[in-house]
Image 1: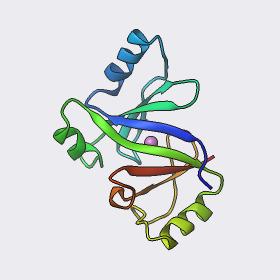
Image 2 (image 1 turned 30 degrees about the vertical axis):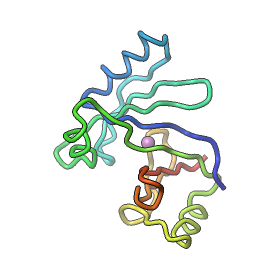
Image 3 (image 1 turned 180 degrees about the horizontal axis):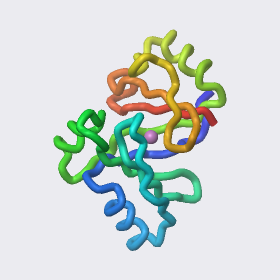
Image 4 (image 1 turned 90 degrees about the vertical axis):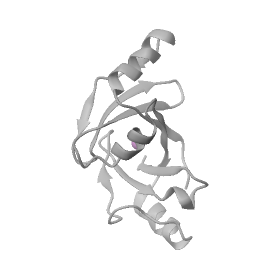
Length: 134
Ligand code: CO
């Protein structure tokens, strides 16, 4: 059920500035800044041949990444996202295996217009895990 690595997310104070460093230093292709009010973040993607880097920046006072960015003033790896062929089947199986889903467990539309869910880092070796419907 585990598919491709969809992206690695790095939380920063300024997502555009962070992505521009990749555009300059690596000549990477970067997206524009996209606000996702439902997730409390602004995203900028760096496209690589085999995956993406997602820079996320807090949006609004209730942003779920505000504290993380406060604690990691220079930025830091925030989560990793895997493709799954069927997000509901994947969610149910992970919960059955003892993983804790964040929020109400209902998939929300993520940065790519596809449903996503997050799982507790304590259940995945300290890494916040996002799954995305492939
Ligand atoms: Co993500």
